[in-house]
Image (cartoon, rainbow, N blue to C red; front, top):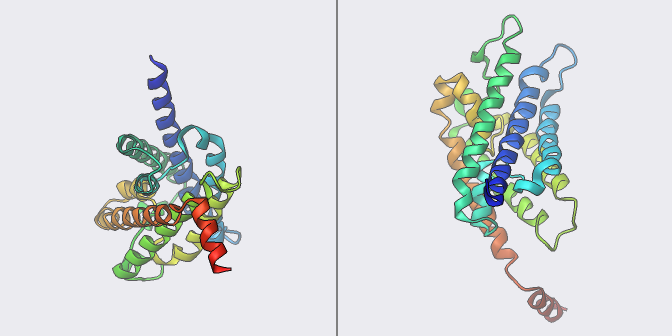
Length: 248
């Protein structure tokens, strides 16, 4: 096997592992720990768990694959000029595989408790009657689009060559925590089509029927955030200095 093929397999494997960890850790905290009698971790704990999965895996394998773990991030980075078109499908397929396997592992664990039912939602994303707070389709569309755009904007900025080195995983993980603190009541927080797909495939029914939104909104938001940062960062440092001097 050539070095090039080994490198490509390594990148896709890193995306598989990272997305697996994100879904197992994030959705697992919601399914297994959020409502544990008396001492459940609650909304704040679930939000922090999702952020920690990104921080830990970004440090572990981000140097191999870039640490996307999310189709919306991959598409957004393409729109922002960071990755070639040829990486889109392989990365997204690896992310989907990681999310689905993680959902299956989580199901094997959760189903070991008497009374467990997939009908409880299994951390699936939803709107209307399936929104944790009863929010409408429009509310879900807007929040998923806007927050994913903000997520990509932070990712693009934190990984810019001009940004302080070594802190990108922390900035990105904290941003994902913030996103969950805002949007868990609205949609149970997606901003990640792979994360939404894994649980939805097991729950079926309403979760699959509403899954389209959790592909459409994050992908559009990712593109918006990637393009916005690309435009903002396009100015050369010399040009920025000239504008600043003129303003002074």
